[in-house]
Image 1 (cartoon, rainbow, N blue to C red):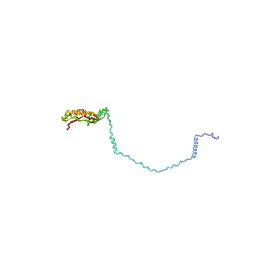
Image 2 (cartoon, helix red, strand yellow):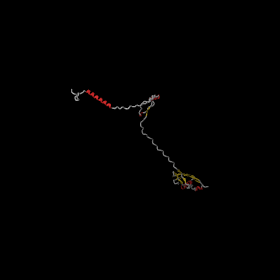
Image 3 (cartoon, rainbow, N blue to C red):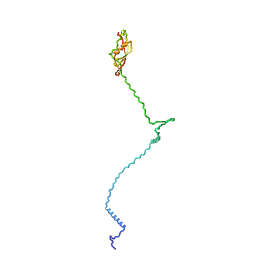
Image 4 (cartoon, one colour):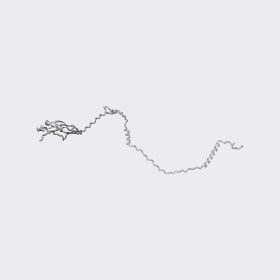
Length: 222
């Protein structure tokens, strides 16, 4: 019988090989586990305390709608006006009683407005001029000489004349108004033209021509 060596060993079956490998793995695992030190975690300490019971929230009942609000909401729905188509602006018609024609407004733009002419303001009235009458100069010789014929006959009388006084104060004209006789008038006329002097009449401070009535008396001395 030949001696069995490693080289001439008979091959084994695959099943026996798998069992051997599994046994070796289990031995290695057991060896590793025996050498590992297991570290235990610290114990968990749990504190407990009593929590008071929280009361449930009060039950709130919904408010019932008031009758007035219901009636108001109902009335609001009832008073909604119906939709009415409005007429165009240019065709506005006012309803009129029966047996009358409708009145239609003219909405066309107005034409140009013509204003009446403005009258000129009335002229401002001028103030009345300041007028002063002619005044006799006291230095003038007013009394004419007595006519000789009338003096011898002892005739008396008076003469009234209308004289025209110029801007220089002199008498420019003499008109007879009344006279007892011609002798008295002629004596008065000559005296006025030669010797009568006046302060002329003035209008707003300017000398103007004026007229003045004068009367001369002829009397004999007693």
